[in-house]
Image (cartoon, rainbow, N blue to C red; front, side, top):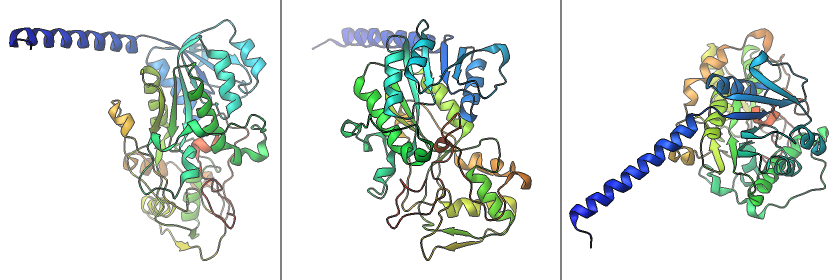
Length: 374
């Protein structure tokens, strides 16, 4: 048994060693890094790049070059088709990065390309995933989904599927992300993180996003037809999504992590919130028969547990802190016309439409499921 004086000395030595490791780790985190952002011209990507530049990092943006960014000479641009293996291999054959943040890894084929191209060329790989990966389990549990709720070790990988077919974009999104995560985790060749973002709100107001749909209903005095007024879900704003991706890129943990603002709303709750903020009545009627579902109108709750992020030291903002201001940003000429159902442009968006709105309006089948309600 150690005498008290010796034990105290050992304790102090261990504490000093831990403090030195902490200081060294923090110094590494604070150092300027060479970072690649794949898909850095969409809503989340542009804000992420802006945050990285403000933090003093060297940033390269990889995209097809179809969308202009406003960063001028501050960034390096690499024009490449993210989903084309040979093009990716050629574009990154002679470069390396401290961190790769991939906003366009949407399928097992994309994941395999990432492994083939970046293995040995980056110290950290951060993939933007989505709450959609939990869709197949909706209704199977009463509590929010933590990361362990999804066992990807049993995920079947479909290498033959045409993951880029625009007609199947909605059907491909959730399984594509699950399989992409499974490939990344199963290989282990990259120190990878998959950030499972809640439904993201806060893109530039346009007639084609879900919040505009709700504002349009209220402003035109149309009733929301809803299926389940108690089926709440999780949300996050664009700025917070970008901030969490930035933070995750600077850390050392690996594996999946959920990202969501505190609080929850159902489709009915969001509709009423819009009415309250605008000072206008928000009429609503329960669906007596199956019909078109509005964005986020789910058969059962779909919530994210963010305890892992909290244990890692991150604290998310609350939905109440940003939603009202966001609603105020929508003007009458920017919202959908009466009766319109917003369509997501998943085939052309730099960031997948489901990252901005995972629940696309649709006419549900006889067996309504969240996997169809996107």
